[in-house]
Length: 105
Length: 387
Image 1 (cartoon, chains in turn red, green):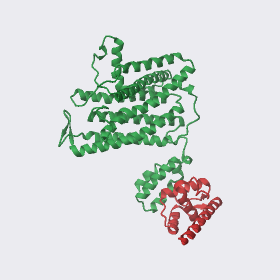
Image 2: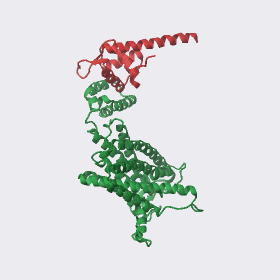
Image 3: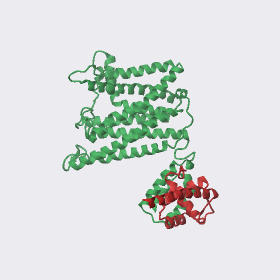
Image 4: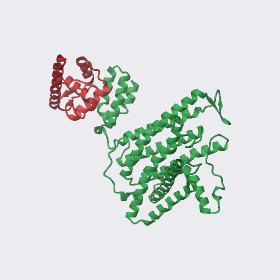
């Protein structure tokens, strides 16, 4: 089974959430937090959010757009889409296996 | 909001240049809670450890100076720690292995840490340096340095041999004898190695006109004896507790002048031996070409030292709070020391020593964290240590 976003440590889950959020269109930081809270129920704190954004930018999975006032929107890149897709496929298999096994119990 | 702005300043400069304004904009809209603050503290630590945000001229500028500053920080915290432990222990009781066996007593733990474990850590770090110097001297046929090493170690051994028990007996069980040999032997090594390293590196510092290094080493080296002097003065004023006092005629005891001199040196150096170690280390590490290998050894000692200091701080605080609650509160009287309101306890240790140790621990932790951020250059050749 492929590693779950290797080398990201505690930012593995926030990275997934941010990529999923940006897959729906470019957003700035606060908008990402609100979107993530809405679709996953997870409240990301600003420290974790920008820690994950920093790592995503370093890997080239997201890129910053021109800042509007003090807010800078980000958008997902092609590499980010590929990474997100790969992770979602893995998670989808896990969900499928889990659901099958729960029905057997 | 002020708290989070202050925490933002803990992020690396490069990070702040990139993300600070954005994060501030988010924080203005976000409900700030305890979790937000803790999350930002973690984020700051994480950013500090991220190589992407390191700058060449960061917290401590140049890498080489960074290493030196880091080790100086360790040594300075050791200074503060030793001074505080010495002063605290002497204010609250005598420093004696036999009177304070290891057990549930936190005072005993703190005393043992201050009297044995810390000097042992110092000794390891110092011996590595001394042996390196000696090996290089032999390789390069610097026989003067070799002879100087023999003199220094001989002086150390001769000095402590006067107080070394020679055989077990009814008053001196075998276990105590072995312990005494190990302990006093360690002191002899400390003294010998300390004198040797101070001599070699001190001469180099003088030759290179490193007056700041020499001055700093002298100040640090004298700080410890200041703790002892304070205790001795306190002892002369009539306070309780044992002390090793130097009487003016002690060096004239006995028929053999060398023996008498050795006794005098033993008493003097027995007290000051751990501090020679620090002075020696300081000179080594502020010299032109500190060895990366030595730095790594010292970092290892520094990790242990930081852990020991944290344990000692906890034991001191627990002990002091326990005594304070069980005994009472004192008010300071310039003549008598302190007046009891009810019972007799020192309020000083709880506040002053715990504070001093907490500050020292903070510095040590900062240096420890920083030590893992430094990527030293390639190993410098050992010959440079005596260059």
